[in-house]
Length: 635
Image 1 (tube, rainbow, N blue to C red):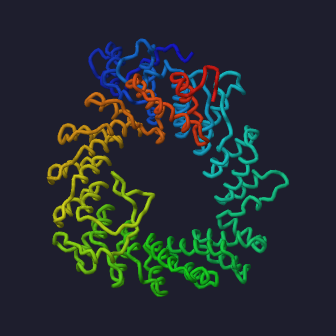
Image 2: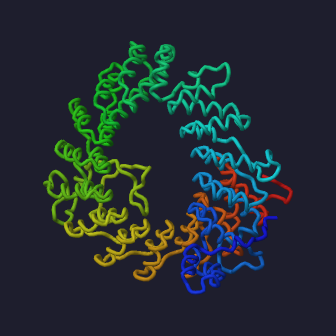
Image 3: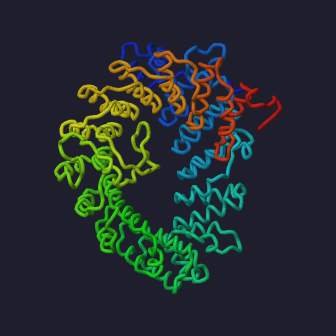
């Protein structure tokens, strides 16, 4: 049974309540009211135990533990994850696993002990051990060893192994590595030992790699493509690269980051003449790009003037464009000047936008002065890029330039483009916009047209209030309702308030929909009171998809909603179990089988956490038809 008898110590007040009562007359008598007052004032009812563990307050943990003691029949009609903590054995075990992983990762010994003492008949997942090893919390590992049922006959079953050894190696926790090898080396297979050794070599810890090395093995066999310069030099001194030209090319590429031109030259001398191989050329190309990214002119010049560099550049017109673009990452004018000396003088507009994004104003000015007449910057392109990234100083600089240099930086309203001008407009490589952020961090696309209202819309979306104010004063293009919609969606409440007070465009239902999807309850409340344009079903569906239960509960209590049909459980929020319990509590009579079936696949794939098995077990009990499993079947 997961039910545990409450002890008097559990009935404690929140610290703020206790402090106030202690300063009142008859404070001793009033202390008995502490738990009752704490219940009334207490934390958000959607606060789960594992989130409370992040705070590390035993007062808070004791409060949650106390209020969780209730039978299914006596549960409150209102939603709270604490209702399920003591009455749902699957959620009980899931919560133990999630909470212990958080406390272990933080090295909070007090909370770790609190969890181990209160929860009974639970398993310590391997992710808990991995978290302790990753963060070097040897004291936590000692506690887990003491509570391991296989060692002490009482306590919890602890799952050792996993990535704990390589985690400790990667983060330099040698004491943890030695401890794991002393007490739990049998839990690690050959693949895990190999991974730990290669990790040790990658971070340059040869002593640890030698300590882990199995008898009869050569350590260099584990460092074939190791990027650390000390390992590369070791292999170079041993003549390793004379027999393996492919590894030599990889090593030259890896050495760019550590700026070891001396080692690069020594490796190249052993490959003279360089191999005429496509794979070698690929590594050389990557090395040149990385030299531009890191802003090292000396390395770039050596790479480009080497015979392998000349072969790589021959017939590849796009490579110069890539090098110019990459040089903007660190803002190196020296590298850019060298590339211009070699003739890379066209298609630099992408580099200009990249320099704006990376906030390299000196390089931006240099590029503005060197833009060839053959390149036409699309209207509002530069203005929008500077605005969306909050580059106010650049906006002020652009405003001072002639419109022939930076299009649409005059004070006039947007002029009408001719079809012939659009036809020859340069395509710019920019981050792809999404519905709310207006710039997607990981995707890029080509674009040739910008709207006059894009700058203020994008500045508002990304929370750059000072830029919004500057555009309002110095530009005439204005914005669209997307400005407030996206600012609200991204939680920029001050921007929303300013737009409400100074602009007339207003917002649409997308404002509250987006704020709900991203969990910004303060924005939702403000919109509801001050600028309510309503919302759609997407509000609660988005909130549930991302695990924002406080928002979901608020929406249900303030606005009418039907059954959520498009809850995207594939997003796998950290509180997925609680999302499912929320749906089960509020929409159990209308839950679609497709919505219930979907978690099976995402919870049982190879990337799933160990704790997901408790969610699966609960779903199998509550929805056996959806899973097509009998009572005696297991997945």
